[in-house]
Length: 138
Image 1 (tube, helix red, strand yellow):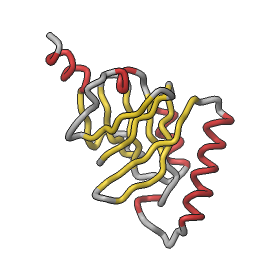
Image 2: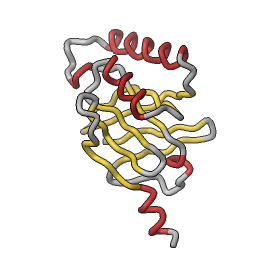
Image 3: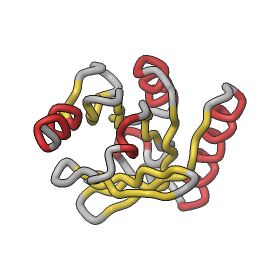
Image 4: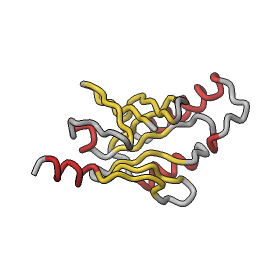
């Protein structure tokens, strides 16, 4: 799994195999959410269907006043257009993921970044990047 973390002034790839060396990319809370392929199934969705669903997600985020940027989520060579949404609570990010019938979202609270199951709200995979950085810089 790879995700693109974007700021206005730059971007960095994140994976559970590697995290950005520049910790500014993980210091601010964010979620990575998509509206592509509900329940991880293609469902015979066309690229246009996915683009329209993601546009609805974009409008929802805009209407609720969130700061967000386009992003990309990738797993096993398959990628989906996503949004990185800054300063959103975990519960709100999960609610949006559920609304768009997603299996999971990525959530970063500034210390732990995780793939979070939208149905159970449990971390499926997590990485304590704050602890990693603390150990590196001591």
